[in-house]
Length: 240
Image 1 (cartoon, helix red, strand yellow):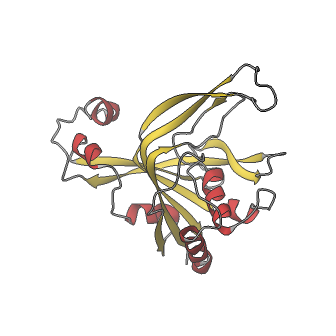
Image 2 (image 1 turned 120 degrees about the vertical axis):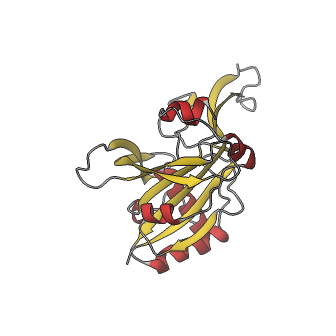
Image 3 (image 1 turned 30 degrees about the vertical axis):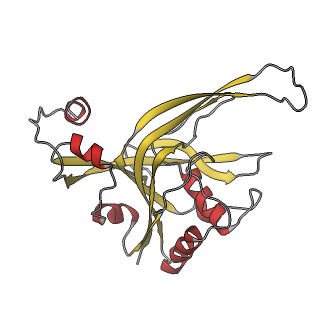
């Protein structure tokens, strides 16, 4: 039997870098596998030089409960201790504001996943959602269920959007689900976020293929009635 560990990644800010270069630090629109693997590795007390191949091999799926909004923050850095007169360097960092995701990690061993859950509830190192300025939600660990990752996300009936967001949405909402693709599965999109090494001197990431599964429709009793135009973008973005 296949089992899945469900995690809630929700907060004022989170940032999942997968294409950051130099002084522009971007964020992906959904949690990266490297970010989720990093959470577990930190919880277990692994050092950045320790191997993480076993964690990276886990299948992963993500449900977008609230996509949030993109926030851009300008920061400056200056090596004032070595050169007080040096010019400050401008760094642009991007974050997801008020986003909520449910992540499912799939494995054949329930005991393995329960061990991850125990470590995440009592982490050896502080846990962050991509950056140190983004601490995890107090209810990070939802639990372990006896189902594959995508099925586990579809069977989890709690919608973690904010009350304000629910009030602005229609009475029926569609939640996007992204999962690891099967070999040669059509519609797959490559993503370079599989951690090979977290060593600061030689960080390295591999590739995986991701597909968007059928959206999960959920009732929203707190929503407002809207006339559908048959246009997903119009109904979920313009009319929301």
